Length: 33
Image (cartoon, rainbow, N blue to C red):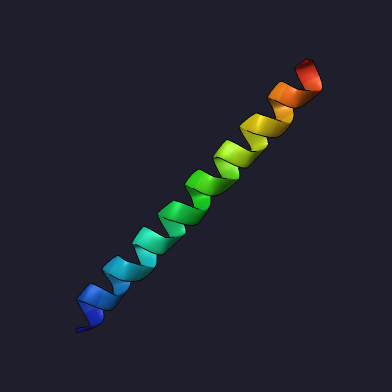
């Protein structure tokens, strides 16, 4: 149970990280243009 919950949390964290990376890339691209 604990291991699966840890995996779920890590997946959520990865999703948040990916979202932050995409958002920052969008901001950088809009600043360049």
